[in-house]
Length: 242
Image 1: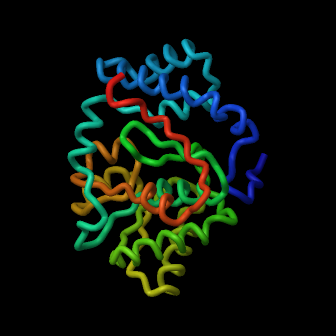
Image 2 (image 1 turned 180 degrees about the horizontal axis):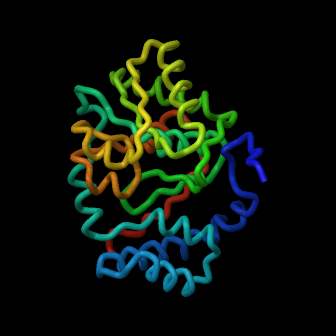
């Protein structure tokens, strides 16, 4: 069946699955899975163990998995994180990662605060990107926010194998030209490796990218906090000691 969605909004079950009475055990599940990950448990087996213990649905398990990181990963990410105010040159942008998160926030979708402090969505591509009503507003807010921080140069990277990436690249370039932003947009067979090797700070919340890039900025969080008022943000980060 073709994807006919016009919004990057919440799943019909999200109001129940992520209601306030669910937050405590979801947060504890993140703590438990982070503990297991820190001790070498494979993510798949660890997630099954934790998910079964707390009787989590598949969507709740996805939220816990996306919010988790090991102690080692957390320390490395904190060490390599850079404030936007420190940037003096171009920024490499994990295109789908950033755009879909901002689209989701604008569409009232669930936005998760993970253990590493990043904002992440629960959307997934499944091999095809579909432009929605939030796409152009999301690109515009990203550009306006970067400009307000003095960052006009951004090099966007998109997954070549994802359908409609070429159209999105063209939209990014057209939007940038209309506002005078110095943006480039590239299609990469493996954008994660391209981002990690970019040699400049990266705007991404992808775990592999955060663990391999020389430096990264928490752009999605900064932007949503500043420019998407009323976003549905759920903090699943566990206490520092758990």
